Length: 588
Ligand SMILES: Nc1ncnc2c1ncn2[C@@H]1O[C@H](COP(=O)(O)OP(=O)(O)OP(=O)(O)O)[C@@H](O)[C@H]1O
Image (cartoon, rainbow, N blue to C red; front, side, top):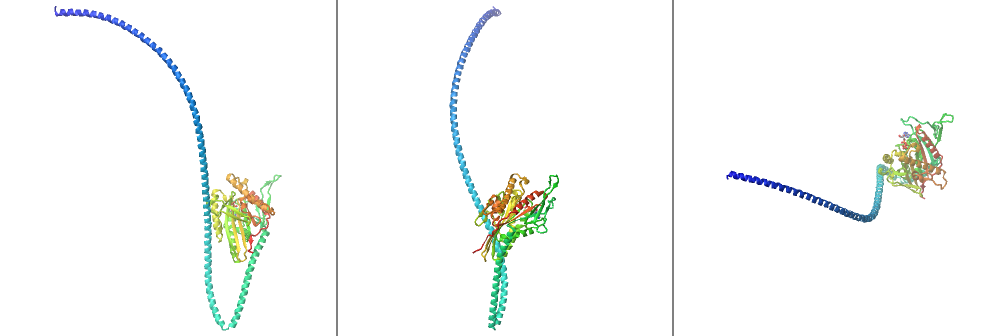
């Protein structure tokens, strides 16, 4: 067989083999497919079984777990409940303890704060006391300085006097030298006839002795006359009355166009009356009527009067103060009526009175009198005293005290500066200081000077080295606060308080004067009801002379206040105060 046959046979064999094999393979594949399908089915069934079993197990487990979880949750809740109870108990305990501790701490801190406060108050007090002591020391030093300045001025005056005396003595010496020479020549001449000279010498001696005796007699007479003058002067003052009231109407200023109708019916004679035409009123019949009110005083000054004329009237009272009496001169009236102009202007009562006192004290020196004159200036504002001669920083701060000596019937001011009046120009310095302080005060309270009383006090202590007499008098020049009434001033707040205080002190002044007028021995006089009357206690009534100026505005707009002021002054004028007693002692 050929190869191709062989190959063809082989191929044929192979093909049949392959067909057989493919058949076998198909049958095997089918068998396998069946098997696989069976297995798959079986497996699915197994899986389903298993899944079923697992679900059941899982359900079982979940149930068990849930039950256990519920049990655990309940256990926990019970435990938490228990713990919460315990904790809230503990918390309450802790809170209680903390509260107690906080309270304890608070008490301790409060105690500490109180202790600190007390310590601070103590320190503050001691600092305050130290401050007061320092202020007092400064005050004393200030006072000493003023006295030293005064001493220095006195020394200067003395030196000038001594220099003048020295010049006089030198020229006297020259005159004596010339006289000596002339005498020597005369002696030479007389020696020639000693008998005649001796006779003429005796004659000369006798005549000289006569002249000396006459001079001593004249001096004694002069002294007696001075004592007599004082006595007579006082008798005249007493006859005029120990309380006098005068009225002054100020002129209208250029800008003031509506003057009130004020007449001076007796101005050609003694001028003691003022007549004011009242406001218009409607009568019952409907007619307009006006009434004229007349008031009589010790003296009435019309608008053209000058300060010089006013002073003429009061100069006799100033003299009385120098003679040893207590004198009070008031200016009363509404704001703007001319009180300050009358009292404190450069030619007002204060400068004039001081000048007269100084001149008179100097004149009396040749009659043996030596005076110590001291001036103080205080303000009464809202019922407190202020020193107008002190430092402006101390206004309303430094407490000024008024002390009375009921035995000696004298008043002393504590914590104030008093200036020794050792020269006529010293008063200028006083008024300047007071004015400066008033200006400072005015910035604190508007129109303060109208809302306060100012009291210028001159104390005069005189001693006569020849007769041994001693006199102690006080002159008080008082510029009262504006007297306008509360309902007219429409005041509120601080201003209302000021007005109430002013009204109170002015009515107290009226009460005191009234009580003095009605008083019998031992009657109570309400000096203590206001600071003003308390300060002037020994210068009102008993041992004193009082003069009140009622100041009047000439304007129609002020008519109502004018009538009120004039009524008040009339009431004072109708008061008669007992005889004044001079505070004079003689040595024996
Ligand atoms: N007689 C007078 N002649 C001229 N001017 C006068 C006279 N009186 C008062 N004046 C003037 O009138 C004004 C008011 O007077 P003054 O200040 O003295 O009144 P006051 O009553 O003191 O008032 P306050 O209560 O406010 O102190 C001032 O300008 C003053 O110069």
